[in-house]
Image 1 (cartoon, one colour):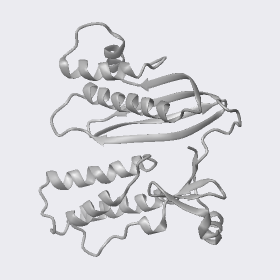
Image 2 (cartoon, one colour; image 1 turned 90 degrees about the vertical axis):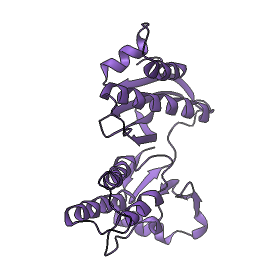
Image 3 (tube, rainbow, N blue to C red; image 1 turned 90 degrees about the horizontal axis):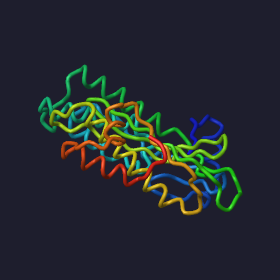
Length: 242
């Protein structure tokens, strides 16, 4: 789904809409007149005078974003909370100045990211079963991993869904974390293909910059159990190209 930041005019226009034109769906607001999705203003978080691990956790888990439009910022908030756990802060212990300032910046970005509106319609064609290409991009770092899915129809490309997770606390190699990101991408591909029953997906492409992951998926050699189990699941998604 394409998205853009809302300008002042758009925000004011939305405020003047008939309340009956707004439908709440999946923690978003659907403007049935403009056919756009927005995040409710009430969902914005306010930083308290004393920032503690409890307050940070409350803000992080209060954000319900099932389609992952805010994933790039939300994952930063999760990483910050993970840092507080690792440094063993008590729930109501005030954070030191540097961490306090870091969280304020993250919170500002989270609230700013909520100021987007999203075109709900992802295919501009009026064809009954338009031909589309599904593109999934998977990537990882030592801290987090995830995937994002786009749908291409002609020259029109729409963001459909994304998902991120924090890297496991145990020491996994980066190639294995990249593999886990690719598995998320494969799962998203299957999910979206099953959901878009009125779309003819003619091609599915899975993108990864991990040569090791690609070799595991395309190869035929015996693999370690951890790798083999995930490769098997990725192959079930039957992508046309990787």
